[in-house]
Length: 208
Image 1: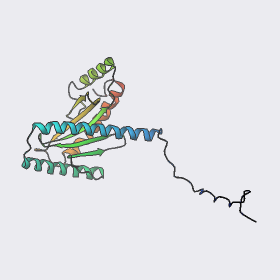
Image 2: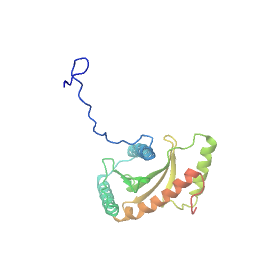
Image 3: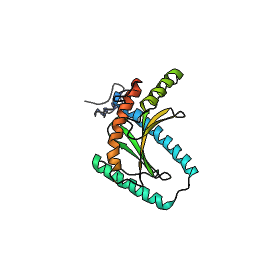
Image 4: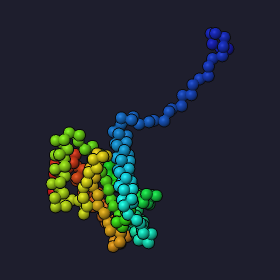
């Protein structure tokens, strides 16, 4: 029997029917959440880099103290790495992204001019455009921060240029031991979660 088609030409080869790898729908909640977190981290790192450049223009760094500060920061990161079971290290910008879970990521960065280790994370990247809603958010944040409770010894600030409401705290690298970051970071994340929930509802965080 000939394999040629009715036209007299050979029949085309059969298409490969091997199954194709599955891909997640771009609208899937997991993909949407991961994309939002990546965008949030990029915006935060860009803002931190701007702040660092502004500070560097106003300060002259002394090499001796800077080396000591960075060494202590690396020792603190090593302790936190062992605690979390993940590898953590400073990049060329003296920063490190630390993920505690899928929803809570913070940036740790060394600031040589102040000899401090800063912990940052965003409370929201969507400050309301509506003046009334924005004022209500700012007033609520100021009220919650009145006595400094649930802030892990840090504070809350706003970058109107990037539309970011941010929480931060810091560690004095001149006078801390290697476990300071390991002890501070979990407390900071607990406070961060309470503040994020409150900002999302524009209501007072639990315990404040």
